[in-house]
Image 1 (tube, rainbow, N blue to C red):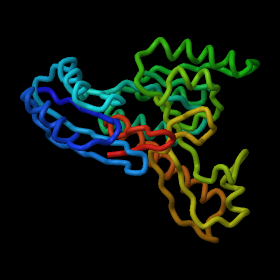
Image 2 (image 1 turned 180 degrees about the horizontal axis):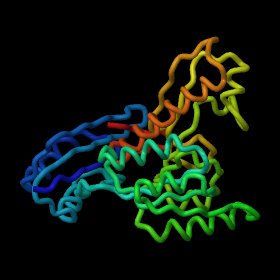
Image 3 (image 1 turned 45 degrees about the vertical axis):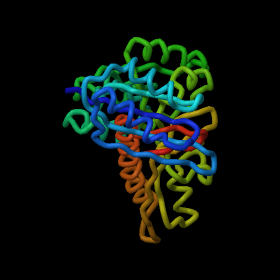
Image 4 (image 1 turned 180 degrees about the vertical axis):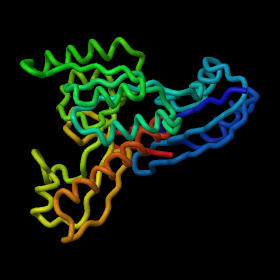
Length: 277
């Protein structure tokens, strides 16, 4: 018996949960687990359910559309392992963590390729039998380099792109190709500490917490909808290198958590925010 995930968002109205349950029951489907949230300020309803049974996706989707508000968005899909491409530059901590989880079966996805603007991490990727593509940016403008990267990406089936410390700013055209499907990680000092060596900048300022933010990429640099965040305490005994080591641990953990949430279809994008079940 197959399992499917049903995601619905629409304007809030009376009796929505009853109507959804009625359609599922009429199709002899069982709700294994469900979550719902109403954004009262904006009058929006969000619903996620794990359902089991023999699902006729087209039939159930049509029936739900007929009884829900006109602005409804419905996503009903079989629960499967998604395909991801990881993009990286020189730092190995986030890429290595994801590849290790992939190898051990903890990452509910198939890593189909690693793409980088340097060849530094090729040996790491190949240890896990993952194809590695080095697309150098040397001597190229941003648009031309992205064109070559896209040529590589489009040779693979891909549900999401994970930026595992990929240190290049993406253009709007690139982002549009994978809208709400690119996940990024950055240290939470932004925008206070922009540019080279943010941990050294933070050390000079005497910060007391360091952290990381994982988010979807949009046209505004590092300002896309936030998926996950975390912080840890630091003090005067930390050198900037200590901060960097601690910060990298937070980065890889936050990115891994965000990727897990997305792969399990627990994330709704609502404007520039997220609703997460």
